[in-house]
Amino acid sequence: MNKIQSLSNRLSVLGYSGFEISHIINYAARGKELTTLSKYQLRDVIQQMEKYVTLGTQYAAAYSK
Image (cartoon, rainbow, N blue to C red; front, side, top):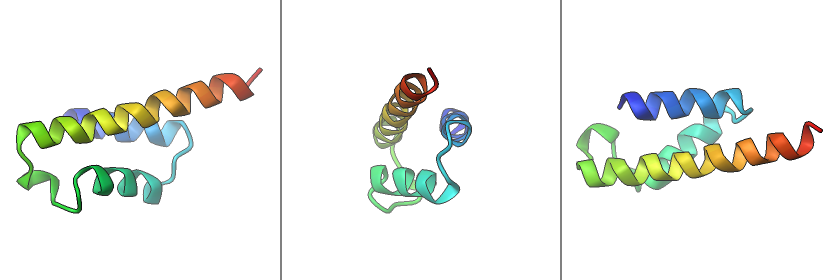
């Protein structure tokens, strides 16, 4: 859960709104509460969030020049 919080913070710094971050998590968790997910399902949520961090970082790098 600490990893998910850390990724949420990184997404926020990259400019994602709270709604967008919640939507990313909810979509990756298939609408389930994070506390009910298995470690494999949590891994999927983390991987999805990491994908958005990567995309956001690439976008910021491309348009900050």
